[in-house]
Structure formats: C-alpha cells, structure tokens
Image (cartoon, rainbow, N blue to C red; front, side, top):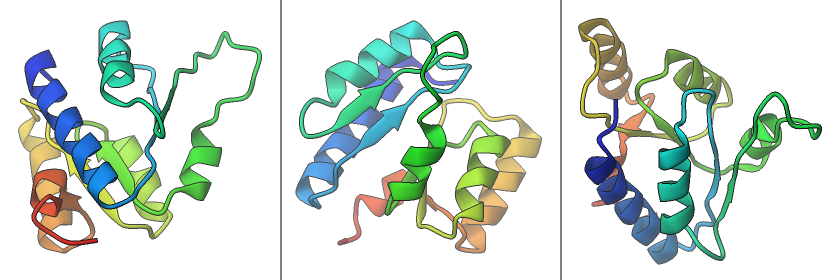
Length: 130
C-alpha cells in the first residue's frame, strides 16, 4: 500500500536520481495501479521520461515485456512478489520502492533479497553513484 504523499516523494526522488545519472525512465502500470497513481506518475515524470498505461481491453499488446527487455536498471514496487520475481529473473540491477505497509511474509521475502544483495532499496541507491 502506497500513500499518495509518500509515493509522490519517492517519485520525485526517482526523477531526480534518473536525471542526475542520465537515466531515461519508462514507467508502466500494473493491474493494481490506481488511476490516481497513474496521474501522479505522469505528473512526476515528463520528458525525456515516458509513462505508459496499459489495460487488457486495449487493442495493442502489453508493453511490459518490451520495457523489461530494454531496461538497464529495474525499479519496482516491493509489494508484488510477481513483479520482483520477474525483475530478478532478468539478472539486471533491481531497486525497490518501499510501500507504507507490507505483510510480515512479504517483508521477510524482500528483506532476504536485500540482505543477499539481489535487490536494493531505492532509498539506499540515492547515496550511490551510477
């Protein structure tokens, strides 16, 4: 669960980090992403970044796999085992956005990944150079 104020702060930090490190961000929603969160993402990330919204009712194919294939670094929400697992399977650096609440089971899973250096909390990446 992300609180909008908290999410806006993380998005602002992510935008600044991308800009400072010359990364272009491509964002895409999940099925659980609210319209409000998509609007917030679109407001926070303007050019050269790109935010795209996809829904199963759209006629065009889901861009998710194409985005994963061209990404150099993946930033995902830590509240989805599926998204984390897909990102890890690609062997690319993985940064996690921290939601305000995680279940105890999901928190143990994510902390284990971070402790074993399979992923890094995005907030920790802010202090690292590219």
